[in-house]
Every structure is written in structure tokens, then in C-alpha cells.
Amino acid sequence: MNSFFVKPMFGSAKAFRVLLIAVCNLSFIALLALLVWQVASYQSRQSIQLLTERGAAMIEQSLRNAYTVLDQISLAPTAPCQDIYADLQKISAATPYFRAIYIADSQTQRIFCSSAHALGKIDSPIQTLISDGATQASGIAWHENSLISDREALVIYRKLDNGRVLIGVLDSQYYKDILQLVMGLRVKTITLRVGHLQLVNQGDDFILMPLTATKNNSTSILIDKLPVKVTAQHNSFQLRKYIETNLPLAFLLAILFLAWSSRWIWLRFGENNHFRQQVIESIQQQQFIAFYQPVIGQQNSIAGVEILARWQHPQHGLLNPDLFIQQAEAQGLLTQIMLSLIQCVEADLSKKPIPAQSRVGINITAQQLNDQAMLNAIFALNAKLKYLDYQLVVELTEEGLVSDPDLANKIIQEMGQAGIMVAIDDFGIGHSSLASLSRFPFHYLKIDKSFIDHIVSREKDQIIVANMVDMARQLNLNVVAEGVENKDQADYLAILGIDYLQGFYFSKPLPMDALSVFQFNIENSAKFPYFH
Image (cartoon, rainbow, N blue to C red):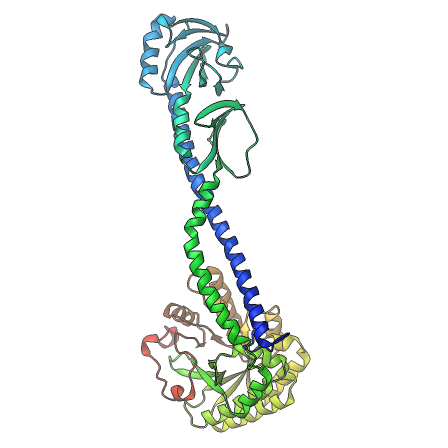
């Protein structure tokens, strides 16, 4: 409910407010705690993601370098081991994480040359290092031991066209160091998965074991074009760290919200603020007053005003209509407020504070189209404004039209015959805007502020507004853009050829005293193309 005053729903007003404050604040604290958790979880995931990506990049670079080393070795089909042994030793020694380089014959399935054995002499089945016998053009796999030691090793191979197989045995300690670097205090478990085995941390060391299912709270990075994956499981310590980091800000927000909401609820639902009685008394005391927001025309001068209600409340100060209009309408008090407001307008405009032939816009709701007292007041106001040489414009929203379209059409026609112009307000946000234009004889089309807010930066809004203007031109409608808040918007809308501009950029709604001395700021001129 958007009203400013609400009668207590049960019990005393004080008990009701205390209960409402408790429910509201507890709900906010719960939502804030959930938000802190979500933010901390996201930060933790992003941190682990970054670390895992860096570790995977280092591992990928080392593997690609290892394959490059193998690719640089040129072998003649019949070259004996003693001719290439020295070169293999040099290449292996020059690459820090190489343990050894082996050469095998794919036809005999025997390893016959090694950089790690005396004079390179070795005779061992190829399956000692490559379980599938090098059936593929290249491959990579963990091996539980190598021909050098019983320690695990990462084995890569490249099969040559001449039948030879180059095998590189990479030191697992190098990859353990990379994984340890990634872990720090942020990762609970980290694995380097290659083929059917994985190197995983256990205590202070790493062990080789069969693949296991990846945990839900893990981040995995698959190395491109290689059957290698780095997986890191998040550490709860990391999550707690980010929660603690976000707690001061969350605590500050909680304090501010609790203070603000408690005060707001206490005032809004006060026992002395019975809405209906307050409105009736305020009408009698003429506390509902008119504010006027200037509407700027293509001559960069005031072309009219829109009447906006304000409640000069003795306790809460000047209240905007969104704080009381909805409940006033729900309780059948809106017409009484509007009748009081029209009296104020007639008295104000009799002083002729704006140029002759200016438009004077007033809003009517759906209920008021069925209220004869309100309609009589509108026609009476029109007669008064004609005498003052002003043009009355009645602004209707689509809600007031679709509820009873036949009645709305009849009333709009009667208004037109009396010389009252009619505008469709907040155009574009209803469900039947185009149908309303087709059915009802409007004179003005007011484009809703939601399309103006991003008119300079959002292409979709630009297209929509441009089409609205073009359509209005073809229907002989004048166009008003509401909610203009800066010069870029004003210039853009003026270039589109919009007839009238309205918004805080030109002026906020003004009381009569301020309207009578209103001077248009030439610096706020819009670039209307037809007058420059």
C-alpha cells in the first residue's frame, strides 16, 4: 500500500508498530545475511577460478614446450642409439623438468635408446612407459613409475612417420610445485587429471590415484586439445575470509536500515494518523494546494503547465501525491481533494502567472470519469480558463479508458465539443496503447518517462520514441516528452521534433509564488531544429 497513513490492523497502534518494525528488520537481516553469503561465495569462486586458470596455464605451457622439445629431435629411420645418445642427453639436460628422453621402435614395441642410461643402451618393452603401445600419433598419461626410479612421472610421446617413437618422461615434482603454488590457503583439494589417473594432494604431499568424481564446490579447467584437467576444490577458510571482509559494510547497512525503517514505520503507522479524518480536516483547512510544472515549447519558452497536487501537512510537511493519492482514491476521497485543488487552481490562475494561450494540464483517474461532480468541476474550470485565455488539457491514463471504453469515448467527445483538449498520459506502458489511439479522439500524446531515461544511450528506446513521434505526426497529435532531466535528453528529443518538453531539467513543480516569477534559463534551451 502506497499511502502515507494506515490505520492499525489489530491491537493498539503502538503494539502494531513494534511488531511491524520487528518483522521488517528481522526480514532485512535475513536477506542481508543471505546477500553477504552469496557475495562471499561469488568472490571465493572467482578467486579460485583465477588461481586455477593460472596454474592450468603454467601446466599447459610446460606440456607444449615438452612436445616442442620432442618435435626438435630429428631421427633417421636406421640411426643407431650411439649416434644420437649425446644429443638426447644435451636436450634432456637443457629442459629443467625432463627426467629422460627415450626412443622406441613401434614395430618391435621395444625401447632401445635412453638419455638416462649409460651410452644410451636399454632394451625394454614400450609398455613399460606407454600402456597402449603408442598406437596413437601422440599421447600423454601418468605413469606410476619410470625406468629411472619408482617415483610417478608424466609421460608424453610423439610417433614419427618413420616408425620411431619419441618418449619424454617429465618430473612430477615440477607439477607438484605448480599445484602447491595454486593451493595456498584457498584450496582444499587440487588435482591434475591426465587420462585415467590423477595427481592429488594428500597431507603435505601428492599421490597418484584413479580418477574420482568432481565435487560440486570445485572449479575445473580443461587444457585445450589435451586430455588434461586441473580441478580445485574450494576451502571453507576462503569463504569465511570473504564473509569477514564483507561484514563491516553489511553491519553498517544493517544499522542504517534499522534506524531508518524503524523511524519510517513509527511515523507512517502512527495512531494519530487516521487517514480519512486527516484528509477531511485538511480539505476544510485548504491544505491541499496546487503545484505547477512548466512545459517548454519549441520556442524554448513556457507553453503551459501541468497541475500537480501537494498536501501541506501540518505534521509531515509537504507531501507528494504518491503518498496519499492511491489511498484517497481507494476510500472515495480523491474527488473531494480534486475539487479543493480546482478551487486553488482557479484562484491561482486568475492572477495570470503564465502567458496567454498556455495549456493547463490536469490529471483525471478512472474513477473520476464516472463521477459527475468531478466532471462538472472540470467543465466549470474549462469555462474559467477560457475566460483567462488559457487552454485546458485533461490527461487520462489508459487505465481510465479500458475500464469503461464506451463511457470514456462519450466523455472525451463531450470534452472536445466544449473546447477541452485531451491527452493520453504515460503512453507506451499500458497493454493497449495503440488500441487507445485508434479508438479515442486525443489531441496530445505524452511519452512516459521510462522511455526518456535512457533515450541518449539505449538504441531500443531511441527507435521506440522515434516511431511514437512519427505515428503521432500522422495522427495529427501533439507530442509531450515527460521526465527530461538533462541537456542531452532535451537536445535529442528536440531534434526528433517533439513539440513539448517537461521535466526537472527545465523546472521542478513550482508553487504559485515561484511560478509567477519563473524565468526560463536560456542555458537550458533545447536544440529544436525548426527554430535555430
